[in-house]
Length: 251
Image (cartoon, rainbow, N blue to C red):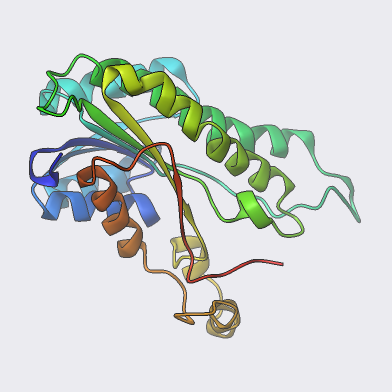
């Protein structure tokens, strides 16, 4: 597959890693439909890149089905799906206010894990209808985990569990979809300069960057976008998780 002929849906595409991916794909000729809950910013980014927008709740079956339908109608087909929608809470299992709120844990799993799978299954159904390329390829899914899936820190029980689930379903989903010519890959980012981190004081940002062995800086969302684009074009990558973290191992 080539980015220039790709028709992609990107969840969380209104900001952060998703926005950077949408911009990178569009710059290289791909058709892009952004799926996001932020209607104002999502529509603005889509307009800036010459793409499309669908206000979407990834945890809701009907919302995602409608977004997939809109994307297919606007672009003619879907050949790539990049899942960047997600949330993070920093709450310990027990703290000064008592046990970890169950609703917060459940919401994290609902959005990060179930939401990712919801989009995957509905997008895959549409991609399976594509005419195969000479090598049999019909599409590719790129999911977003985190290095917290492997070495989560204090306060990351919910987040690490959700991202560990994304890692865990990568290989079986790739095997499930192999017969349909759809690849499944996962990217596990380290500490990136997303809107959430950009709002932190400069000294805190420098402290976080100092923990990264090489290069000693926060990741640039554009680097995630380029890696996602590489995965789309590199047809022999399948069923694997790629860390992009400057060799950071959290403790």
